[in-house]
Image (tube, rainbow, N blue to C red; front, side, top):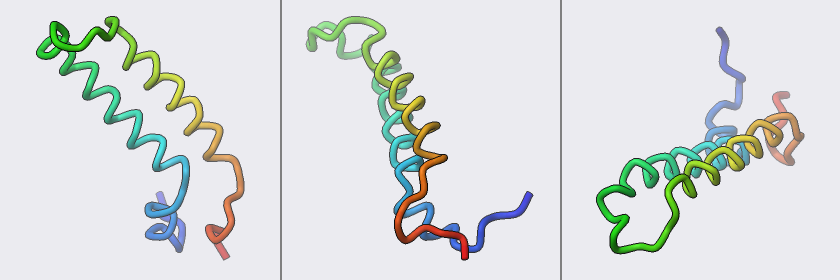
Length: 72
């Protein structure tokens, strides 16, 4: 395995990375729901569903060229 030469820029600016971090946060919220479920009226599985949608978006974003992130 070999990293791209501009991996730091990709890590900071790529939409796929940002969306994956958001999906991870939503997954964490889904795990925490039993602790605060009685306070917030959010249906079970809502964060998991959002996480799935955002992960699919991250997958698609991985194939879209973004300005300032070319590997040249």
